[in-house]
Length: 358
Image (cartoon, rainbow, N blue to C red):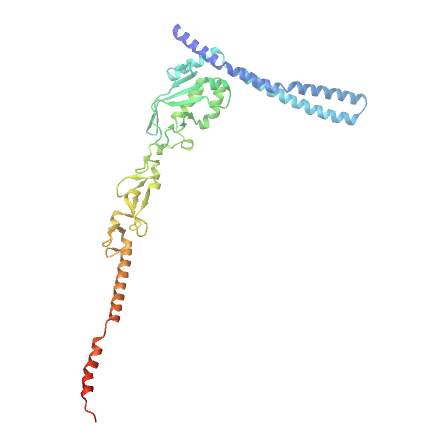
């Protein structure tokens, strides 16, 4: 028992040492507004002296104007002093005492079973139980408080949430929990309470708030919705899609993204890019069932670009050939000698020669 208490006290001392710069930073924040107080006090003293002079000489109009300026200056000084008091109070409570840290560490042990203090970080961390949200197992998470960043009092988030049994979202490997991306927590409605707990040094309350965020699911603030957690990879490019964005190819029976999906221009059936071929005639996609080889040239054409098994191009060539053949026949007929018409003339010549002369 004594050994356990000594170990806790030693850890509390290390945490206090790591948080010591936080107090110095708080005092620095107090010095900034305090630096303006002496100048304001000197200005108020000068106005008070001027007011006395005006009253002694019965310069009542000037005295009234100086009185107004003095009132405004006193009001501004009071506001500045109240702000300095608030900063001083925050600086005073920014670092818990060692006994308070010891109590916080004991609470961490009671709530989480144990905690870890890494001197290299330094980092104070706990491990959650396995998280399961809506039948989706996400595994255990380590909740880490980076003491150096917390002590720096800057805008950096000192909380890290690390998946120990990672099962990230299919579409984004950095999202290990609907509310965790890149080990950074989106606390949602618990953000204000979390900042307050850390600012007051209530580390156990802060860790409990984070665990509560991990054990509860808010679809409105999720990086990736649980409905799309596993997703589906595109059968062509490999892009992981949401379930609602999947397109089913009836030919190869695979799922594809919208970029890798289309349809057959001839039969209007849904097809992926791998199951359609561009028709060389109309340059539209067509499935294998709507492509036939031309009986003349042998190239594949869609049914819309063929007639009687012959593509449009070859049909045009055949028509041209037929026209040329007809023209050639006409030309040959026109150029051939007409023997039938010349035969009577040849037979009549002897008759004319032997005809008797009257």
